[in-house]
Length: 101
Image (cartoon, rainbow, N blue to C red):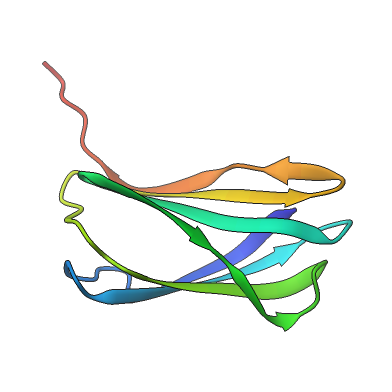
């Protein structure tokens, strides 16, 4: 499975605000698991994606999450996508502070 498009609305939510993540995913075989792992400053949430359009090989998947934490230093989004023909675990880094000392 492979994501091709991601929309996060809003991309900069405040703590306790909800955000919706919508992902276009395609695969050679049916997707058996679709998750986003959202990592912020002091928290990590595993969010199950639900198929909202298309089918399990070429579809649009979505989840909504309440942001529980700030993301001043760390804001990462990792995928856990699985099918009978493979796994995708890549992700996106929006913010990751590195101590240079």
